[in-house]
View (cartoon, rainbow, N blue to C red):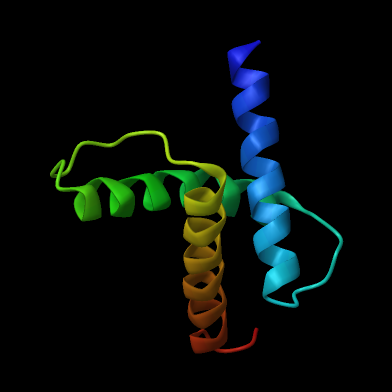
Length: 85
């Protein structure tokens, strides 16, 4: 049950980040990956700011969304840097 909750939370965080960046409102696999990775990125940043070192902790919803935004921005930059097929 915990795994399903984590997946749903990551999907929701990625979807909100996608909406904030104006990337459309239709979620896809990238949304889930960005939300899950964003939760870890956001949690890591919050740990560093709080002075806990590199301890990876679950972050709140705001940290997860902020992390997902960062992941989507980096992902978009990497997609644009690749030549078209």
